Length: 319
Image (cartoon, rainbow, N blue to C red; front, side, top):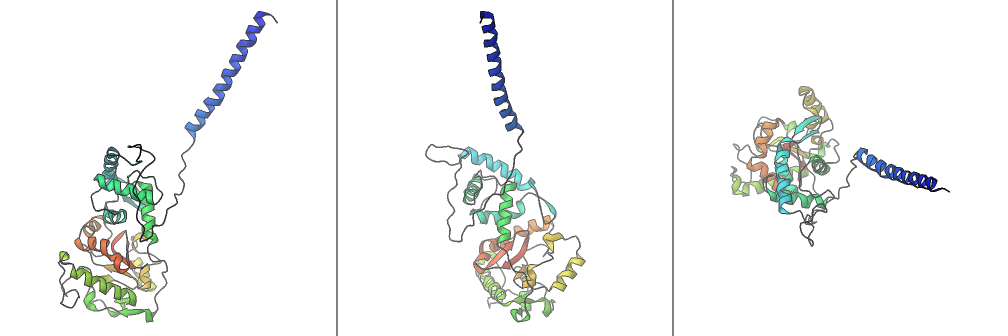
């Protein structure tokens, strides 16, 4: 073979190799660049009541070779994001658009085990610990994915069975325990165990002098005291249907078709403002009252779980 032919073969071989390299790496780069991001369901670990939440750490940031935790600058960055998202995160619940999670801040603090503002580094650090404990990326930011898991957990703690209570399961509550003293007997019915738990909770609230609740000297709220009195308890299915007709724009988040009030184990309790208005401004008033903050911290001791969307709504669902 002549030298000229050998040179041509050599050049052709180089060109062929270069083409293969381009095809392999070029196509790989193109496919990685254009692959869509797929969000999958994140498995959530159920936390037992007695289980201790582990200390948060992250495999995204290593601030110390021997400790895989988010560093202070990372928590500062997360705190800045939380400050914005608290007011502006867009999401939906019950067929209604929501903005921010500021109305649920007290419940969130209770869940993650801290009592501080969202713009605080300590909030981000506590949130990161909680995120890690339930299998979420522990970045300390309360974004839409984290909020979705939180709401799911809150909702999972609510009453499961919502069949209508039988007459022998109900008792008529004392008019002294109700917000509206003109409320008729049939609208003052409460499931028996629930009513007993409510009475114990009221005794504890009266004993907490920081709430400054007026009482009648018999471990009961005074006639003139409005806070923590029952606004609504048991509702029949027919009565609930009438309420939905009267308030057609309340949506699923407001007046449920399959209401927990059917059981007699759901209580609407007065915590301030308009008793049962879901307007954001009204709920903002309610979540900042001392009695609501007290319920967030203490209602669980008596078996009551919150419906996060309505600050006044508490369901008797003991462990």
